[in-house]
Length: 64
Image (cartoon, rainbow, N blue to C red; front, top):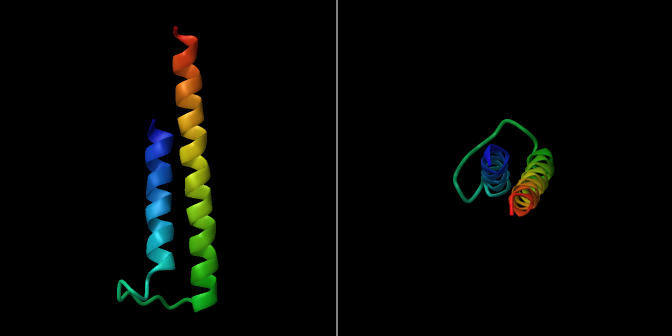
């Protein structure tokens, strides 16, 4: 369950990095690097959420 929450945090960070211009945030990093890193963090966060979701439901199926 905690892994899913951490994954959600990664997704939020990825979205902030991806949409930093619309949120009026400025970073000292290159734009391309910010977008690529944001995409990687977004994908990793999604992976963690899916992995947590699958492990939670496979564990609850074994209890029945």
